[in-house]
Structures are given as structure tokens and as C-alpha cells.
Image (tube, rainbow, N blue to C red):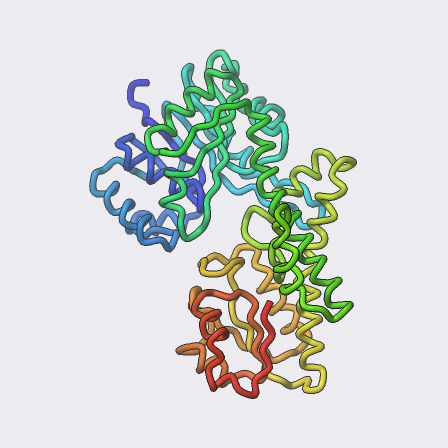
Length: 396
């Protein structure tokens, strides 16, 4: 298409921005669009929104080469990739698709025969066919004939995005086989993992299955932990022994489930198949209940000293990752603070708290609560330094 960019990416978050960088690094003419004005201003200054040195290096390189530009609104492009947020409604437990719908509407005036549209956002089953397709066809173009649609979810681990986006296998789900082939060819510009072609519905389901599998297994571990508490037995030791069985691999219990995938994606299945997803819904409720259960354990630990200074270490949603999205640690802290408890916070990865190091943090608390064990916290607790003597320590 004359005058059109190779690819336009709508939504420059934890998924959209890395894809943007990789396509630009591969030499394609790429444009990025995001409605977050502060983020766009940061891009203009060359600031990477994701705190990973490798991504900043790639960003610097593509800016220097001139293969990446940023736009307030999309324009003509050979391919459009949509990676906008699809959060969960906190009460209805249904996907909020407003951003996805708006992104699709925004490209309709620019659609031309031969365009490829890729949806990357996590979405409920049948979303490509019942939500995206009708919007795109407002252009007067027929999906599967004039334009192609593909669903390509990501599998990325914060802290290692630059490696995983290249080396992980990618699911490529086309509305038609031709669409899958075209999307695979585009991703092939930077992906070294396998490009697994299938249909759009299967791709939607696979994304949800992957995170639901993990959520259900975490829920089992958390439920066993609650049962162990009733009988005052060591759940960690019990799980270690159970895992010696050749066909058992239980996960460790924790304070709940955070991040932008596991607490949300299983609800997308339950939304579309409520009668069949009894186990999935129960697992979600179990994991959502864990912050309240952990807060209750902490309250019991300080019941004899209501004015105890409670030192909470770790606020991210998982260890050694500077990402607080949907963090159960913050739910616990906010519940305790809401009840008037004196809570001190320390997180060396996020830089939260006014403490120069772990020892300084410990000196300012009566009870130490390890909510998220970053390596630096775990190492200190494991070596049992003398400054912990006399302190009660709760590790979750």
C-alpha cells in the first residue's frame, strides 16, 4: 500500500510495546499508538516504560535508525496489531471490552483491501467473531476475503520479556488459514520459537487455558494450606513429601494471585460458559479470598499487642519483578491499614519504603511479615542474621 506504514500497534503496554520494538528492530516501518498522554510524552523523550535494560537498549537503537514513530491516532498501514487492555469488571466478573472496541473503531477509516488485523489482547471466547469482526466490516470490506484477521496471544514473563518474546513459541490463530499464514510471516521477522498456526477460536481458548491451569493449581495449594492450618501441620513439608510421588507436582501456597493475567483470564471462560466452569470459578474465588485469610493470620500474630509495628516486605505480584498490578500484597496491607494497624512497608525491587536496607527495615518493626520474597529478602531471612533475634517472622 503506497504511503502506508508496515505495521501500526495500538496499545503500548507490557505486550504491545515490546512487539513494537521487535518489529522495528527487524527493519519494518512501525508506528505506535496509545491514548495515555504521559506515556506518549515519555516515548518522545526516549524513555522505556518497562524497567528492563534490554528493552531500553533496543528502544535506543530503533529510535536512532528511525524505524519507529509514535502517533496520537492510527493512519494507513499494511497491518494493524491491537494490544489494548481488557480488564475484568470487579463485580460482574466479565471482560471490559471498551478499549478493544474503540481501537477497532479507530482503524476502520484506514482499512483497505489486503490489510491484516491482529488482535493480541486477552479476550473471551468468540470475541474475534462476535465483537471484532462486525466492527471491522463497518469499513465495507469482508473479513476473510478483503481483509484478514488473526488472534495472536503472548506468553511473557516480566523481567525477561526481551528474551521470551523472541524465543517463546507463539500461537497464531487465523480467522482463515491464509490469515494465520500472513500473521506467522509477520511474527517471523523476529520470533525464533515455533509459530503454531490454528484458528482464532482455538487460539483464544488456548490463552485462557494456560492461565486457568496455573490459577487452578495455585488454588489447590492455597486450599491445602488453609486445611493444614486447621490441623496445625506444616503444609510446606507435606507438599515436599507429596511431590516425591512420581506423578504429583503440587505448587507452593501463597498470599493470592496477582498480575494482569491469572486473576482475570479464568473469568473470561466462566463468563462465556458459566454452567460448565464450576471448578474454574471456585478456584478464582479461593485465590481471591487469600489476601483476607493472610491478613487474618497477621492479626492473630499481633493480637496481644494491638499497637505492634507490622513490617510488610514485598509488594509486587511475584518475587523479583517490578510489577504491582493486581498485587495481593497491597490488598493485605490496605486491609490492615484500614483497620488501624501500624504497617511499615519495604520493597527493594520497587523502591517502596524509606529504609536503606533490610536491617534498617527490621529495626523499625516488631513483627516481620514476608509477603513477597524477592531474592534479597529471602537470602536475609534464610541466613538468620543476629538483628532478627527476638523478632517474630511470618513467611508466606
